[in-house]
Every structure is written in C-alpha cells, then in structure tokens.
Length: 474
Image (cartoon, rainbow, N blue to C red; front, side):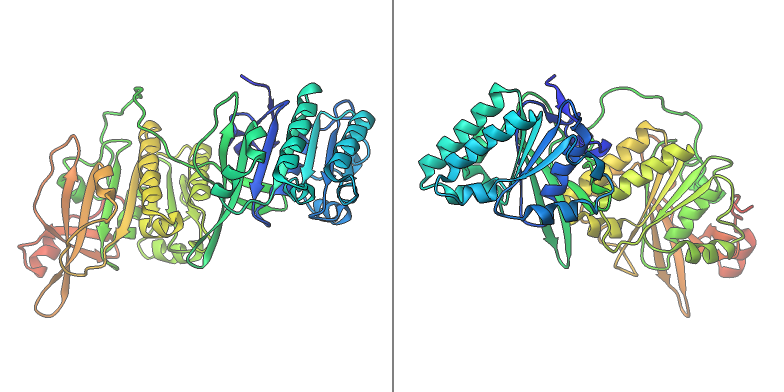
C-alpha cells in the first residue's frame, strides 16, 4: 500500500484507510467555513518534524497573521513548533506582482531550498487562478508545480473554495490531484450538517460516501458513515432464548427472543413502548443493558423507572441520553457502540426511531443505518429492541414507511381498543423469525407492576384476577 500521512485523528484516518497518500498532491475543496484550513493543520502538526518540516503558504484569500491567530485557538496547534518544524509564509504579495504565477513558482523554489519541507500547504490555491492571464497559463502553472512536487518527493495539500462537485470536476486543479477531499455544508430544514467525502485517491482504498463531522476546539471530529454490508462470514449464535422481561409476552413469542435478534415495538403515543423497553432491560437477569433514548433526559427517566420500582443505579444498566436537536446519527451510533463495548452490554433499547429518522435527513440513509445497527448487534450478540410511534390511535395501516419492520426479526404491535366508557390496550405479535408465535390479540394494562397481560375476551374484573404479573420487577 502507498505510504500514508496520518491526520492524528483516528476516525478521519479510518475514512482515509490510514491517511492521505504521501509524496502526492491532495486537493481539499469546500466552501468557506467548512474547515479546509483546520483539516490541513491536522496533517501539518501531526507530521512535521525538524528533520522533515512542513511549509504552510497563504495566498490572497486570508492574511497570514489572521491564519496564525485563529490557528492558535485549536488544541493541537503547537506554537513551539512554529519556526522549528512548521514554517508559515505568504505568497499573496508575490502573486500580485507583475510576474504573477511565474513569480509564485520562483518564490516556491526559493522556499523549498530554504526549508526543505516534506509537506507543503497552499491556502488558498484556487485564489491563484485569478493571476493567470488565461486558462492555458494556469494549466502550465499547475504542470510546473506538480513537477516540482514529484521531483523532490513532496506531499502537497492544495486548498480551494469550490462550491459544488460539478464545479470541482471541471477545474484543472482536480486533474493534477492524486487525492481529492470534499468538505460540504448541507442544509436540512433549519439544520446544517457538515460532510466530508473522498472523491478520489490514487494508490489506495478509502471509505466511500459522505461522513458527518463537527468543528470543535479539537479540530475536525469525523464520524465515519455507518453502512455495513451483509456479512457472509459466520459468527456464534446463542441457543438460549432471551426473556422480554414479561413472562406472558415470552409465551406469546414462543419463549422470548433469540439472542442477537432485533425487535420493533410499534404503537401510538402512551401505549407503553418505552415501558416495554424498560421491562426488557430490567428483566435481563444480570445481562448488561443500554437505554439509548432521544425522548427523555436522565432526570425524567429516573422519575419514570421509580414509578415501577426500578432504579437507574441498578448495576449493569446504562443510560445513553441525547437530545435530537442537532443530532448527527453517525455520531450517535458510534457513541452507542462504544458504550456497549465499554460495558459489555448484551441488551440495547433504542427509543425512538422517529427521532433517528429526522437526524438521518434522508429515508435511504435511515434505512441503511437501521440495517447496519441490526447487523452489528447480531454479530456482537446484542439483543436489540427499537420503539416506533404510530400516528393512528385506532387501527394500523402500516408500521413504517421505510421498511424497518422487514429488517427486524420480531415485530410487536401495541394498539388502543375502544370500549363503552374507556380505552383499553391490546398487544399483537405480528412477526417472529425462526420461531412460532401466538397470533391472538392480548389485552394488557399498565399499573405499578408495569405491563400486565390478560385475554382480550375476559372482563376487566376477570382480567385483573388472571393477569400474569411481570417477572422483571425487582
């Protein structure tokens, strides 16, 4: 594989399959504010040494003093390296002289002799095109610069303000580049999400697609796109069934879930979807569990679980509570899997899918995420339960617009049932893979013991006397 330049950011290097190709020309393209300069700084301060320094050249797009001033706000910016292993120079004044781009080449030659860098950054490179008398002259400039980089085995990062992929494809800059990274900011309603995408990389593989990122004091925090293909390799599958946390529901499913199975619990508001998830976690008989919620804060959850005799401080139970406001679904999923690895959790409740759909921003991406989530949980033998709110209070025309139910091993439907003077609730098991299940609709109530089932045909008085008490309450 081609030698790589690490960014110093593990997740970004994962996208780049180890880093950028060394001794190559990389074009970093993006609109203003997308983080091109910060991305370049990652590679500069990660790879520069006194023996193999980095040369950072500004042009006419941003004054050198401003670039340095804002650069020092980054946590990884090492001020002690400036002048020792990292050298900043200004090419803007040279470009504005009568010699134009010929003068820029001469200045670059002088800087290469003076500093002998292993890495050079030109920011903004695209701004230099304005000083070419015509397109042919600019292409000659590109050719001459590429030749210099190849002659001395120099890694070059050329930054440019390109507003769209089609504009980038038509630019002559892209022809000389060995690798192209695109940074974009996409609007979804009132939200703006930044994405990094590798459009080209000679001599190596990379993670395709758009990868969300945030700009923070630590630089670019990249969250590689989670889109797992179907894994044909084998993995251990447990044979002992997993309890739902409610004995009567275990009976409906034919003795609970298979380990590593994915379950969808769908129903209207107030039907007990979150409570089903809590039964599943607290009925784990010592298995670690995670409640990944986008619905309630930890304070709200503490009040809810206390009402049913549980506690958030129960050993093995972890809460991953995040607000759906500004949520990046890749960031969220990486956080969930990291917590599962840290705690050894074998049960995961996702509450709810509607909030993840909004964060995904696109129905196709949402379906990919759910497929990947189910696949990863199956391979790691983590039993997954997901809740989904249905808009209809009575009757159900469809469970999900995006085929989520097809991706799940088990599907449970919660519904309201109109009665003479009150509303009742009923539960139906619509689907279980590799298992038989009861198709009967079962009435249930929510009381201090949680969800308690009875036959739908029984009267409320008989149902109360014959209800099966949950086996999951401590």
